[in-house]
Length: 243
Image (tube, rainbow, N blue to C red; front, side):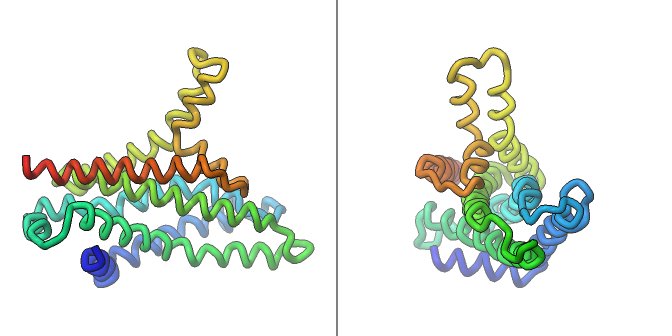
């Protein structure tokens, strides 16, 4: 697993993939925080990062599929997947090596955004007038969210040879799991507690819950289960070559 992890990290940073991904993420989030009139902190007048944490999931559901789309699709297309699987590594080790490398790239992209927190904390009146607990919870929520999106992206890449198809499929899956269940729960056919159950199936509910600064074990179990489910489906997709 470690050899796959190192190989993927080297590939990201020996080409423009890693730098472009991080650069695009920082430019978009920076514009949300400081430029766009609907969300920028300077016009909003409150020391908060809510605009960033509302926009970040939608930016990540584009960024992460762009990172993961080549993971297996390119290997299948070029035929190097056969060389990869002949190594003395299990399918799970290969998947986890690629998973951790993609997740690390997302974490590296998130680290510079801590400057947003420092800047807002410094500009606050009085200095430090920002909900540090809420910000910490939101960052934890973003890490879980990114973990889920990476697992989804790897699954999409494992079931197709075409990187563009893998990208589009991953975006659709991420968007559906993030938004669709929350919207479905608002339909009149769901009432009493059924609407709440439907809402809780979606990623958005649990991300919003963690972002409030309250770390609930049920939210953590949800994200870990989501990641495990898509890693398992990716393993099945890779195993299909033996059938």
